[in-house]
Length: 95
Image 1: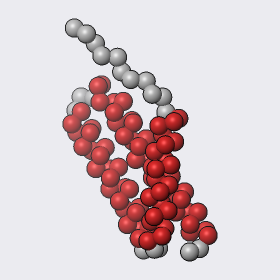
Image 2: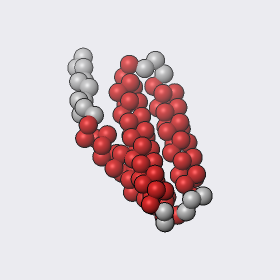
Image 3: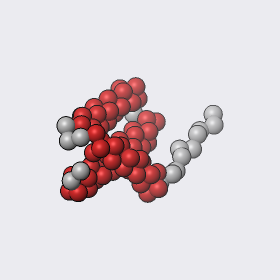
């Protein structure tokens, strides 16, 4: 396993985690104000899923060990999003 490709795999995994979970955060924040929440939800899910799957598919050509590194570091991206993005919850209106 080459050191530079291992580092790139880890960076790719973190970037994909930031993209996927940051996009999820963005989508959830916009649901209450969206004119088309179903379209927003499904569109966001499919875009995020296809980008992440395409990147992991590309990594499979390099070797399974690089995919494993990227998948493990994908979780680091999730942890970064949950730590650094605000945890405010929308206030429900009582009518």
